Length: 348
Image 1: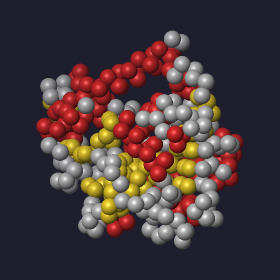
Image 2: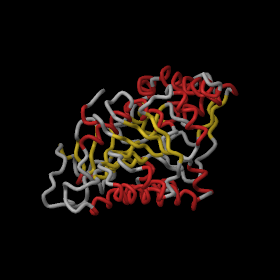
Image 3: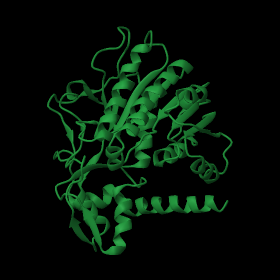
Image 4: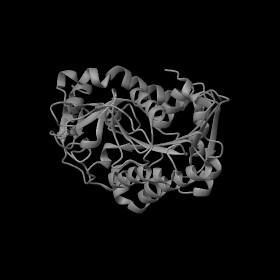
């Protein structure tokens, strides 16, 4: 999927050495961009990533932390597009280290936005999570704050034509990502037992490649202030386990602190300003940002619409699990990622 929109653009991704970053870099290098900057704080992962992508001449690496506003301002010079994916994401870790999560996920997002405003970046997309909706854990609360900060920052534009435009992409579980449920199941399979917190639990699922397509689409069509939500299907977690490790016994261990039974991507409060734009929904700003600004067009959803993982419109049966999960390709993705890391360590 090549698009002329990205021709000669300079793009920067924060948190670029993670699962999202690897997939985003892979997709961006297919575009006619001028330069792609990976901004992260782990120099070892950057060196691995540089080798994994064959020392691509369009790829640059900046060591820095989103907590450091001055470093962000320097990194954002002459950058056209920023995708902000840096975050502390592990729910138990953020529950135990709440102030660290706030510094990275909330203050870090504020720093990214302020640096983008100062540097004249054209477009900023913040990557969010279904856990930002009706949050019950600190990670979700910090992502809710990050969404609010991003959307509200559009008022700093003096007119609809001024830079930057800032929007959000919110989605659920990513298949094949580092630390995902599928990776955990693979690790537990050898023991013959896979743990499950609650048999009622449901989650939204999407392939990382599809997420990249939706993020790129959002960058192209955003007007500023939207929360883009890709269309995803949901499954019971027990059906996922039985599909991936049908030979294993399932041990129910009880719900963890900060964990939900079901996830929500769009609430009943957001439904009145949500439109269907094809492969995604777009939640429009609560009030028009500028009188002369033309908002995205699409079909309004029903006023009682709710995008929830246990809703019958989205919840699929166990027989659909293998199709949704794309089991063989998902496991192959995790293994190929491990192979790339081993090759990078040995300088191959």
